[in-house]
Image (cartoon, rainbow, N blue to C red; front, side, top):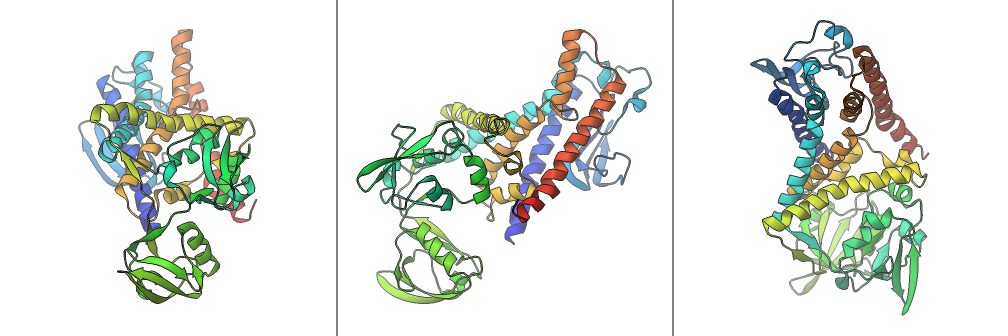
Length: 448
């Protein structure tokens, strides 16, 4: 069920974003009176072969445009009449350009059409983050609340953190929100370091140059977590916790004969007992009760914890939410640029920095949380805008480069050149897809 929820969220999120992206191209083309032959979510052919397995799950022609949902769940497209792309080549455009064709329009109009999808993704990302900021505010854990210190993961220990350390400074400066510990500016910056208080002394813990690669190897676990006292929040139906009688608001005080104080340590202790029966002592309505529960094979009981550290919420008016949401949205692009810089400088591995659909689905998570769903979708919208702007033939950015050349040089590349560039770009994308979807997962599976 968890896999279905993750896949469902990813599919819905990407469908929304692809539809809006293609609508950006569609709307700008129609505005300049360019004929649009098709508007499809997903492909109605075996991408990238436009004449193979042509069929749609749903389609309807309205006016001159056929709208539909294709069978091949990878992206989507608009077929703009008179434009060389994955649906049309130079041979199909041998006749003289007609007034309603893409190629008959001035370069500046064609440039706006090609930027339409990117602009739509940026607008979508900014709008999502603005509305989330306005409706939810910013929930944060004050650094002063982390009074029990932190628990590092294996990576955190390798960096130099120790259980119980209290992080008091980041890059030599005090901070007020614990989430600043995970700031991309710190984790991807140069010469970043944390200062911790340990047994009455201050110790600097540097962020290694290859931190992103090591973080990727670790998986979704945080490299440090606050040591937080906790209670049971929700119990999954049919889980070991539910079968064993664990209830919401229970406070787990003992695991077998070991005292339980903080959730991260409790998680580690459960993992060490994966697949084994345990005795939990819980405090319920002021009384102690012992429960017999068998930990599942992954080291989980099947409940959601409720941290007893007090979080704070910062609320904004709608006017204040616009610049804050915009900054959050463009922060995603800034992080992408920084990550690319790390790759080019050899401080991060390209192989470990890219992820396919499964990694995206995992980021959405195994439970359907609408706030997190829209947060992830807003982030993906900005990532899609950035990736589509890359100057690679077959992407919008490749078309933009050729149009800018035409506007500067006063002449456009030939249709045959554009067709060949499209083929080269498509081969690059297919190679990248094969690497991300097939080769990279195999390499990770065998530990390379």
